Length: 490
Figure (cartoon, rainbow, N blue to C red):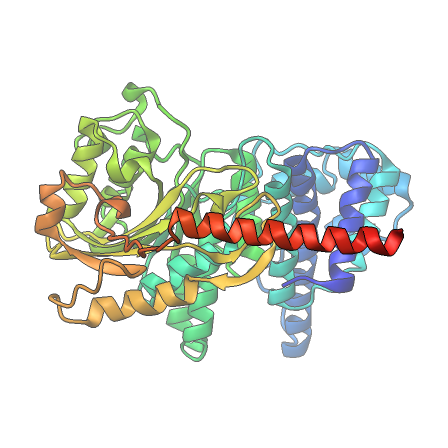
């Protein structure tokens, strides 16, 4: 977590952009992303140079050639502001290099098409470069935390419909599905790639030693992480988020996930965690026919569930955030997707989350569905959990509080998957299991209130005559006290 002086330094950079006339949060983050990437490229080149000097060999796959030293961070950061700005904007300058870097560096370079340099004044550029140069980001965790803090600015701004899944909710979902070194992970609505980061952190924590093996490291860096995002700005931001978290070559596709252009996403992933958009309806004709064969709908929240089922390999598992309407909607399409997941796949869990989880930018009630692709059914009972607190207040401030169901959710979920199928639990508890037969009888309704039992505690009240007598006694006492006060004042 970024705190203290480091947070203050980032806030000063942010303020400099605003003072310099750039106030849109996405634009600020995008411009900072370019600069952070240039700094990262220079760091990688320095590492290559040090290795070459140590081995007394030529530099292996250099990022910069000798003639390009002026466009390196370590060189231009000391230039006069006017000269530095010209170096960025001129033909064959710094930004042209960034746009055309091609295969000379990390995956981020693939997404620079259409990138625009928007720092219009030499003073602002020099100010921001100097501030970023003074921030110590020598380790992966700090780099990642710095960028995570920048991305949090999108949430607080709530502009452009862009908002991030809270980090602790991502962690809860990742802890439930337990990624492994063999997994191929995908988020088909990747945005800032928060779920990718969550999976990578889980892998590093649980498989630290194994990651030193060359074949494992190669899979982690090149094959483990997939994603789709049609917003070119967001895919650049997401790619940088992964690079700063130590994932140099993720497979991110600049494509509309639901379209025919993404039809190859079939049986590709073993693990999906996602928070798909809930933005209403799409043009049905633009949607991949394979998705429509699973659910005939225009609603994105239903189409993405079908997409995830299509993209998962057999045995692949998923944890997906959906709006509550998916759980109980009565339309043909709602029934169709629930029936598909329950009858043809294996639905394991429904975690009902309170409506304040995504405040301040959205107040919709949501749930997490956890399921496995089997194509042969397997749902015997479904584990439900009624989350009431996530460690933060459920108002717009989202201040930290003590109440937090998340550790209990993760622990009880794993216990529920290991316990006997006839151990259903009590319907009056926060968590319990419901037999699939009962779900069938309720027309595939997955809302927790359909199955939860509420115990109403009987309250006994005094008889009216007793209450009247007590009131009269109080009146008498009050009159006596008033009389004593008048005597004292006489």
